[in-house]
Image (cartoon, rainbow, N blue to C red; front, top):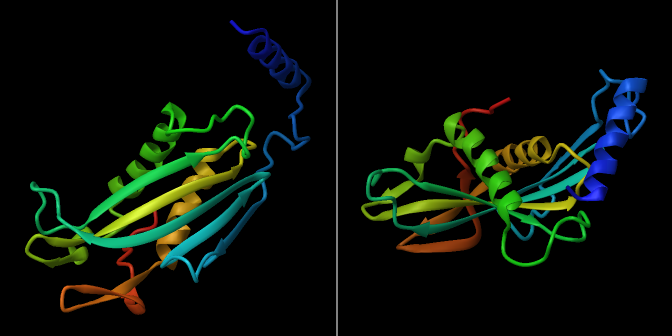
Length: 187
């Protein structure tokens, strides 16, 4: 066991025994929550910036046209990725996504997918063409509750997202045909 992990564990145990928290919140006190939808409106069809305590997460939504999964030919596709940069936390490492980034993306993806938040059937365009929804999670500062902050930011960004126009087999960037078909908001 690393000495640093041991010391941190002992420090946390002592705080719990004393009835205290690292950030001086009461045990039943929530972290403050701020949500700003449309944070990158010019750059992406949907986005949200969330502050949960000192944790800061930015989620961008992008859409493209692609092929459906063979077992669901009449449904659009959703994919989620997470970026954990060293700037957000000294324990994060640069490079390809590590197991923590993959886990964060999978948990957020599962929450959205299993709640049927997006009506994937409405993302069907024509045979062998569907909308692909990309949910890109960018952790800007990690001070705990990453899954909560990322999930809130992802749903907020999906609610903010607009569908690009699609005519004659082409995406018309900068023109919109309506909102992304979000039908459920998981809590």
